[in-house]
Image 1 (cartoon, rainbow, N blue to C red):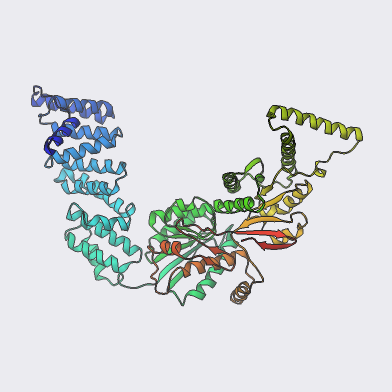
Image 2: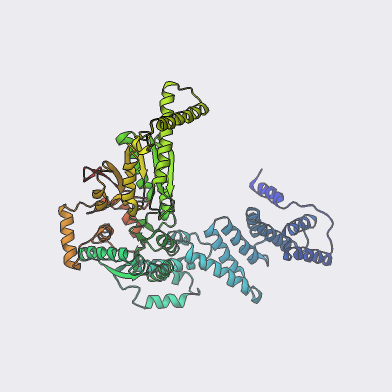
Amino acid sequence: MTAKMLRLFVLLLLWPVLILAQPDAAAGRQNFQQGVKLYQSGKYSEAEVFFNKQIQLAPQNPQLTAQVLMLIKSRYKLGDYKRAGDGCTWFIERYPNSQYIDDVYYVRGHTAYRNGQLSQAVSSWLMAAQSAAGPNSRQLYDKSMSLAGQSLQHRISAVELKQMISPANSPLEAYLYAYYLAVKLEKQGMNAQAREYYRSAQTLNPDGPYQQFIAEKLAGSSIDAVQPAKIALLLPLSGEQAEIGNAIADGVRLAFKEESSRIKIELTLFDYQSDLFMAIQIMKKLSADPSVAAVFGAVENEVAAACAVVAGYENLPLITPTATSDDLTLLSENVIQLSTPVKVLAQYLATYANEAFQSRRIATLAPVEPYFTRYVREFVEAHQKLGGEVPVQQWYYPGEKNFSTQFMRLKRDGLKISFRDSVLAGEPELKDQEIDRRYLLHQRNEVDKALHSKTKIDSADVPLKAFDAVFLPVYKQDVEVMAAQFAYHNLQTHLLGNSDWYDLNALRKNKNYINGLVFVTDVYLNEESRDYIEFRNKFRTAYQKTPGQYELVGYDAFRFVLRAFSAQSSVNRVNVSSSLTAAPEFRGIGKDFNIGEKRFNNSARLLKYQNGVLIPMN
């Protein structure tokens, strides 16, 4: 079969034809209006059937192209984007000079957009605009240009635009691609390349709609001026998180002072007042300033997530120093997360427990709060992948002060597990129902013994060895009570914790209760190290106060950011993310950084509190 015959065969499949007697023109127009009324009343299924039937019955009637257009539009309204798009392509090839060609290009743009083909959608809308002729088509022209312009401005990246210029279908397309590419490059601070594409656009279509703007750009000196890139600090300097925000800002400014002679950037500071909506407004304002190469900040997970969405939409890199959400980097490719996510921390601890003391059976106790429930879930999943089990999980509500109920339940379940282990050791084929029956009998016997001997029953006197470890990810304010309850209930096992256990005063007060505690954190400070003493002295000189944890976090984090760029680097929105992900592992005074392609910190520290001393385990 020849190519021509094959194409004819395909067309016949798309548009079945029955050669029948032709109705007169008046009857054809009347039938056509009947179908249009169905379409206009929202009866798209009936309209599709109607126009399909009319095309088959009278393939040579004067309304044929109009009927095909309405069939395509009906299928689009029904969500059948594949067949609607195929119909548009067939129409354009068959009737390139039709008076409806602009409408068909317009619909093809919509079907391509719905099918995820954004560049083809833009091309089709621009072809619709170019095909629109006469005063009656002005509205279609305006809509097509608007849709194409919005997509080029907000949905298509500079990299994609570069690839679209050469194969463009018309001078207007190539011109607009070059123009929007120049705008994006200028916004990213890449002025030399922006000038190149403004000039290219100027010659591609001298009658283009933005030529006066381009001429003003090229005539002015602003595009050629080499301005130092800005890194904006977006921090809560007032409001609920003011203490943390100001501490980080002090650390950042000290790091900037030390590095500013090596790399040419400017630092600007913005206070979002611990308010999410203000943070978003500032992010949008910063995105409109082409000299801002990146934003450093947003300390809370929720605020960082909202800013990440803006960062993705505006192609503005966001470097967050403290947010720990696992999904943050999924919101935008422009987000760099300098804190270690919960999932990584949980995996570190689970792996250590498995390797260090062969933990197979672990119990957990944590607050019912999203951060902690996720922490426990990630830990449990990591532990189970290593072959372990978590048979007991207890929870408490934030604000509770007495955790005896949770520990009693934990111990009750543990004692039952110990009984089960002992019974199965002698009778491995025993069924669960029989084990439960024997356990109830065992409990009654223990109670009878106590009553007969008039001995007070106190489960705290009974040691529990059912678990290889107990994981307590808790709030910092709960550490002391948790430590006492752990000791009181005689849980003879390893104790695992989260970074909130990193409270030296609380650890010292309870050192007899929690000897051997191992917890995971992404910050570790050796106050006797030479590096820390030097940092502390510099900080005291600069601010007349002693630095705390967040001052050090800001200092380490910003030193890592600045050292990711060489002295010859031109810092801009394009190379910030790539420079940070490609940066070698950086060891700070209290915090290490290893970003990599996933754009979050993969470093964590395991610390053990043994005999009143904090010992690094890695």
